Amino acid sequence: MRECASCGRNLPQSSYTSNQFSRSPGVSRCAVCVHGHQADVPLASKVDSGRYNISKTGGISSHALRNPFAQGAFRWVAKGVYDSGSRSGQACVAKWFKTGAVFEADYFTLDIKAVDKALEIVNRFNELNIINKSVKINVPDVWIFEDSSEEGAEEWAGQHVLGEPFIQNYQKFNSNTGWFDDSIQWGEVMQALSHFSYHVSGGQFVLCDIQGGIYQHEVVLSDPVILSRNRDYGVTDLGSDGISTFFNQHRCNNYCRSNWTRPANPAQIFRPVAGTTMMRRLVPTRQSQPNRTYYP
Image (tube, rainbow, N blue to C red):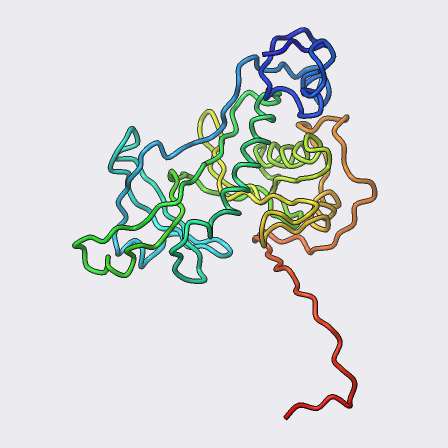
């Protein structure tokens, strides 16, 4: 815990930016005083906005796997039930890539990395107490299918998938190309969260492609996309061009703060669409040799 030099509150390290916390006590200022708004009242306790599996095992029938109830741009989603732990009896989902079977947990490294960064950003957003509800984010685990006596189960044995709690009333609030749905109030909140992610990261990241379900006291998100300057977060990370496109389309609303930073003169590089856009890395090639080079 450290006392903020501006507001005098005794706050955890998570309430400070890394730059401010690196300064000595008595000098460092909390994120609210640096980035916030005079009406935002920070929470003194540490925030964990993750929604976790808690249970280690679940059951998903072969029929559910053969007939996914939902799909994203590049993943299938099947519904099952936790059969252990405190979530026993509750609904869960398994997600796997449309490109084919995966037998290595490392294949999901970038998915987990994006969730970790999104959770860090959402924690900061919740600490500012901008809204009177909570924003949660599903934190998946890599699950491995075991063989069973059920018909068809053998074809799934050993395969890796992402497992996480089921989300009701699933909908999309914005995309990774600047599209957004502001027809409901939560849509405006999610746009503000995307704007905040750029501000609190010093212009390095934008949390977007925000989707999930609205509950009575919170909204629960899943499958976040992180746009980064160096394109460190996989094929859905559209890099600086994606960040520029987001801000070209973004119009600040009642949940944004006037002192939040944004890039100067952002241009539209991508066409805003509701779906998730992917951009693979290009491998550089060399020019062909002169005409005197012959091949047998």
